[in-house]
Length: 256
Image (cartoon, rainbow, N blue to C red):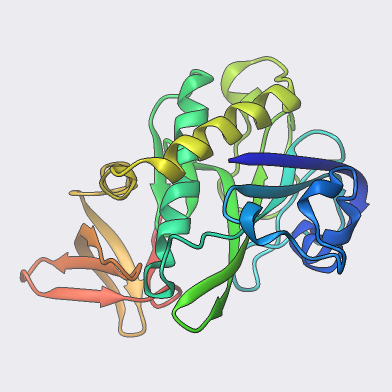
């Protein structure tokens, strides 16, 4: 996959910026036709990326916000055209990105790296990375996907009321080159995108998999075991009475 990266100083959201400004990637005009669209032959193998030094309104899933100190972390979005992934398998984008980030952090020496369903990245019981993935569908195919990522890198202190943030600096005790870190992630993303085992790897990396833990849904709190994630991305839990519960995103909470 070819990665074309542009750096900007500030924006409210890199996802929104990338959606609204793809034509600003004119530093590689061979990617575009005369009308400013991506050339069909290059679409599947091209990834456009915008990296912001600071996001004024970084977003996570739903109404969640993302705290990030200016110039300290990696806040970026990727635009891909995954023509080889059917619309009914769009959760594979989440699997690919999550596995790639876990592999990246492992290469930097992080231990106990896992994926808190669907796509938060944890080290131990602390959140180091969040994602916002927006897929646009066209019939039975994915027209494009924008993958927004916030990775805590060199921030030493978190001031928001987020319950469990952590950064690479806090874990490793030293600064990390963010450009080198981005390159490592993109290499891992390319590998995960082309791997036939990414789905099984995603499931192996799930936070709390096989453990009896506390959850909460609309009926209240309960203890269950995280057993699997369905092909469409829904979570499968088995309670103490061995009853199966299947949840879509936001229908169940992990009680930390």
